[in-house]
Length: 191
Image 1 (cartoon, rainbow, N blue to C red):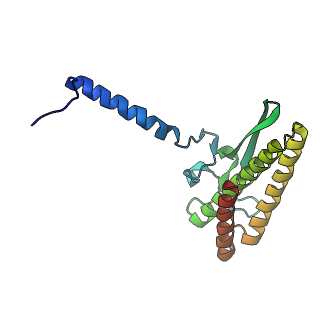
Image 2: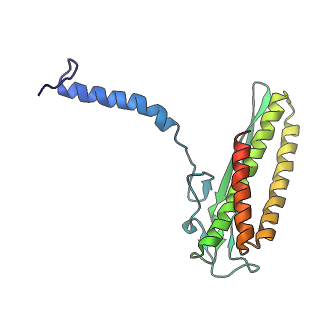
Image 3: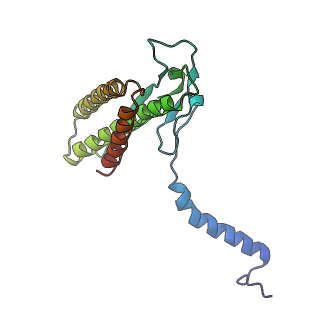
């Protein structure tokens, strides 16, 4: 048996192979999604669905609700090349989100869709910001007004979702909403 090491001793060839692996793997690892998760928040990610362990357990229900998902659109603005630039994240707020039923998976799916709706509106904000930047709009007040308008739409849409799905109890409406939101996420992502 002939061992080909391209003129290197065994130890050097292993080191060389490790170097080659790292050099080619780095771009792949660099493309992995980095998700912020702390004791108090979880950034929205398609690969990180919510679990009941993310919620605080509450024995007593508030106003008949069995769960509450609190999300925040974190919007940070700065100037780059004379144009307003924004970083927007959707954060699930663990301390403010609660459930009184950690066994109801349909309820968890309903709550997950609230988080998904928040991501949908993050993408809508991002899309509008890009349009404003392309038009060379420099006034940050215009951007903030557009962000506020879209966040108001988000709140109205979230209330409509709860109303029409009866907080997830109406199975057909819940399924319709899920499909609508997932389709909308794809459409807004591809704009």
